[in-house]
Length: 110
Picture 1 (cartoon, helix red, strand yellow):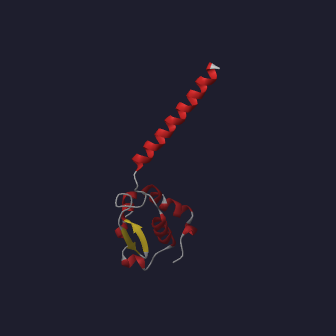
Picture 2 (cartoon, helix red, strand yellow):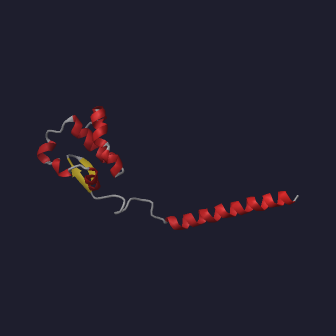
Picture 3 (cartoon, rainbow, N blue to C red):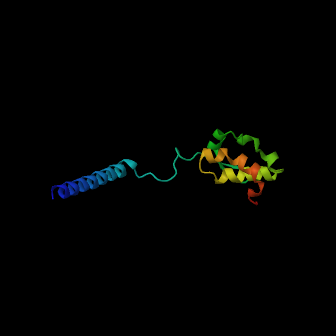
């Protein structure tokens, strides 16, 4: 009977511990869940694609797609720009070029 009571106390203590931990995690997490200046950079219109300016950190020269180049975009350029438009993080954006070289059919029609 003592073992059963000890097991019951241990289970109740574990439950209370996890409940308190969940409450603390909820209090600390904060209400900010949407995009803000720290999680999203400025948007820039490049050849008709909305590109986050942070993707320059991924190694892309965003100024290279100037208006004169926009008139002669190839499949690879359209694929990379479409991927950058849909990328959510710098890590995903850095893989856009390799993904488009491997599978250029991913280019979005414009």
